[in-house]
Image (tube, rainbow, N blue to C red; front, side, top):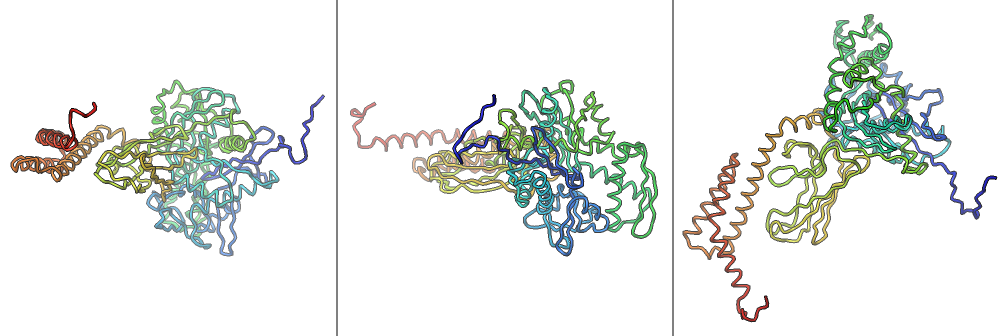
Length: 622
């Protein structure tokens, strides 16, 4: 016999209530939305049965905006106003876009930093364009689920920096979505794959999408997904393979520079050829340009492999680094999960198989697996499923730190630290009576400020005036589960606080992201020497300032000759510290310390005399 729960009217806890939550894979080429129904993650389709929504937005002069397949069909006819692959421009300035010659848009750089695109409907930012894609997916989900959404988990490449993540979150807010979490794409894929296959062990998630490449190494164990390391390239993806085919067509057909319409036509044709060659040995490239010229050439799968070999190799370099950072060998990898539509290319799968000495796992649809994992996480975050069933431990891709005296970087949170993370470090003042401190937040792996990326600057004011080194300022870095950073500075004795949510106008360029790690390894010894020199200079400056203050206060304790000798040594140290010989600076500091030993003793004696002046020493309590 079944038991029925009885509750007073209006007092029921509604245990059957299922909150509507979705997972969104906001992709460069295609986007998807998924949800959990009857305990299973499912990709939602539109009214025509399409699961994939092309990430293409078209603006019309009458104010109409089309998204998806309809917009995609107009790319060649209206390239200026039909925007595709906008994900590559998120959080980016004009200087961060490596090659604009074959991109048919009219870019406009702004003081705010993020590039904007001129359309017939006005100037549009990548955030606004992405919001249209998200708005379309939201409408699809609400129609399919028959209700208002509680929230969404949106996936981002693991190597998206702070600016790109913030831009994605801003786009979701514009689309009317409540963001439950930004989830790294490889982690989402691991969730979908791990739960579907009840897998345990160390897995590599190889994620090559339309515009980005990520590789993450995760340990799966009893519902815990721990990211051990991550690496990648935020400007490498299927679009680059399309561009190689496009350039081959220009060369093979001996074409002159093309107008924007023909450029978009051939880029679209290049993508179609790439997809065809994933399953066939040869493709016919046939197009009629606006000039009436007919293009009719053949491209073989073998030729495509030759054209794109270095792009494939570019994905393996970050893979090696991720393995090294995780401290793992190839033999310790249990499986390699392929994610992203670009991984359908046979040369990609073969290269991965050769590198890891095992066949990659392809039993889940690489286009859908990220959205499915995001839906699973969204279902947990809205409370439809217990958090105990699933624990995600993601990591931060690049170190975060502060500028200290001498232009040095003090790391507070190291790269590959597990998210969310909060770490604090104490700093102090450099000068007597200092009442303010400038906080400079940096991102990167090098020792000097000039070699890292500046994220934000703010000031802590109201520090009580004290002797240099007496104040204690605790700086706390907090990175949330979305990978977004906030920094707080607090003076411990007075409690004065300053804080900032780091929202840079745009993030790291491709070269900056990939080269930061490379240069940190190649320049380790050089950085060590540079840091030692800066530290010696800082010590010299601190000593000079302290002695000058002492001379001003107690110079009467010295004879004219003694005072002159100390001043000469101070000047000698000043001159030496302007050079680049660390050992000479250290030696000059030692000489000055020795020269002032007698002066320091006299100051101490004078201070003791003053303290006990007028008191009977026999009556003092010890």
